[in-house]
Image: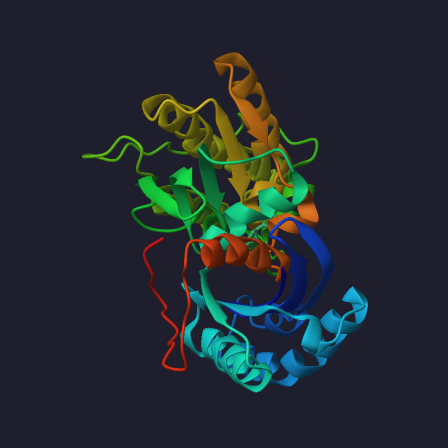
Length: 333
Ligand code: AMP
Ligand code: MG
C-alpha cells in the first residue's frame, strides 16, 4: 500500500511516499529554519505562509522521487496536531484537497505518533510493545507503546520541552536557532560538572519532568556573568546543560520501562539527535538489560516519511477522516 504523507506542524514542510509503513520511497523536506533564525525562534505567521508556498512543489517532488504517479497512491495522510495551528491547517487543507481530487482515503496522524514511527522505518524488526522517549522542540514525554495505535503517557514535562530548554539557553548564549545542534557543538571539550544546575523533582508523578527551572538557572548564570563582567566558560556551560537535561530524561526513561515491564526502548524527536543523551541512554539501557533503538539523525527531526509510516498502522486500525477534518494545536496522543 502506497501512502502520500504530509507534515507541516512547525517549520518544516514535508511530503513523502511510504510503502506498507516501512519502506520510504521518497522523503522531501523543505526547512524554513533559516527564515526563523533571524527572529531567534519560529514566527507562526511566517511558518504558515512558507508552508503554502512550498507544499505543492514538494508534493510533485515526492511523487517524482518515488517514481510514482498520483494514480499509484492508495491513501493520503497528514499531521493534524499537535503543533502551530496555522501551520497545521496548511497541511490539513492541502491533504484534504489531494484526497478529494484523487478519490483516496484520508488518514489523520498525530505528530508524536509519527516521531515514534520514525523508528519503524529504520528498524524493520521493531514492533510494539516498547517504551518511547519522545523529546522534541514542543514535547517531552514517556509513552508506553502498547500497540501501533494504542499508547499511554507515563510521564511528561510540566512546563518547557527539552528542545525548548536547549533553544532558549542557546539564544542567550548568542547561538543560532534552532539551538540544539549548536549547543552540542559548543559543549565539545567542556567540563559537564563545572556549573551545577538543578535537577527537578516533580510532586505527584516521579516520571513527570520539568525544564523551566533549569532553563532559568542557566539564563541567570549567563546574565549574572555579563553584569559582573566575569568571563563565562561557554563550552562547560553547554556541557553542564546537556548533562542536566540528560539526567532529567534518562533515569526516568529507564524507570518508566521497568514500571510497564518493557524490555525495549525507542527514542524519538529532534532532541534524540543529541550525542550526550544518546550516549547516556545507551549506557543506562545496557545496564538495565533493555534493548535500545536510536533513530538515525535524519529521522529524528520532522519529516513526512514518519507520518506515512504511522498512517499505515492507523489505516489498518480503521482510522479515516472526511472533509470535516480539522487541525488541533493540542491533541492527546
Ligand atoms: P522537533 O520538534 O522534533 O522537530 O525537534 C526540534 C528540536 O530538536 C529543537 O528544539 C532543536 O534544538 C532540537 N535539536 C535538534 N538537534 C539537536 C541536538 N543535536 N541536540 C539537542 N537538541 C537538538
Ligand atoms: Mg516534531
